[in-house]
Length: 467
Image 1: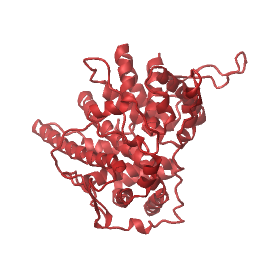
Image 2 (image 1 turned 90 degrees about the vertical axis):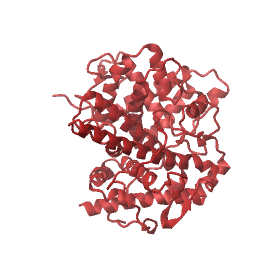
Image 3 (image 1 turned 180 degrees about the horizontal axis):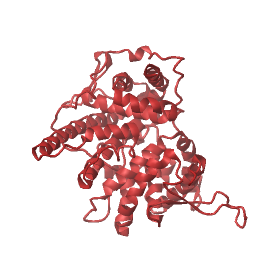
Image 4 (image 1 turned 45 degrees about the vertical axis):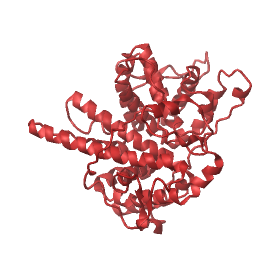
């Protein structure tokens, strides 16, 4: 009987590969030194996603497995461990879902020509593909890898070590001078430690605002808007205090219809204003006020509450992401993009500070896409019923499942034909990535971090009630 490898061993191996992957990406000009030294939140996604991509290129086994570096680098030491492969048989339980999703992508990646493989790496990094015609499967593959990377980036063990990985890539292969002197400004988010349920099970007064309608009781309403699906780099992830960048990924994102420029070039002065402006406070309080409504749904509570003890970081991000989806569908005016906040306050896009507009516009765009997805779900269900077939699980429900349980948990949730399932899965993962991306970006703002303890009070209160 095979024994699972330790979590620490897998983490050490992953970060060893991550350093080499970031270095290789720098050599191939997928990530430039300026980006590596910045504090852009998308690095928390594109970095580990590239590591998964390079691991897929190296894979030589079927079913796919990952060759692990020796834990003892003693050279001729006879006690050194033999080479090991990470497989389903010896994978720690908490990483099995990651390995399954990665393993499914390996044949698709290896079947691409070298030119399209390089295009895939560019898409992972938010850059436009170079080949013409473009390979249509690239965005779906990239979405899966980025979805796994998002879950990895939410782990505290990853956050604490990522700055060292970035610095190692910056130091590797440098020609001296300015590049060698670059230091990464990446700082891990604050620790997401849940408050004791016994200590403060009651939410703070800020959460006792009038509750918002629960979008999990009914699907969002219909709306006419252009499809706005994106699978590559999220330009809304960057904290406003990160350095100005001139890298081409921002322009490529805009040219692909991915929204306005990233707020990454905002100065530290405007960043301080952004963190204290009433606009960010209104959006924050509106999101946090919706947590109670979101968590009151039994299906959501069953998924989120156990995470509070098992993985507080995931519980926090999952809750905020679900709140973003809820607010985007019921608190955003689809015609004007204004936010109907707590206590009846309204924030229009014109009143919003320039530095905050990209976040607000993305929140509105998520609401538009949610309404489009709901329309597609309805049309798909009607078509299936007319053909005498059972309707598939709605994309919106699949998206919520990914937000709650991760990309791996959604794979085995239903039994459908492969082609239809792959199409629906891909849309759900891409949409979940978009929501998670905004969640990562907004929660890195100090205004959100300062109130995170109160989020855990809400979670702890629901955990107490669930016992």
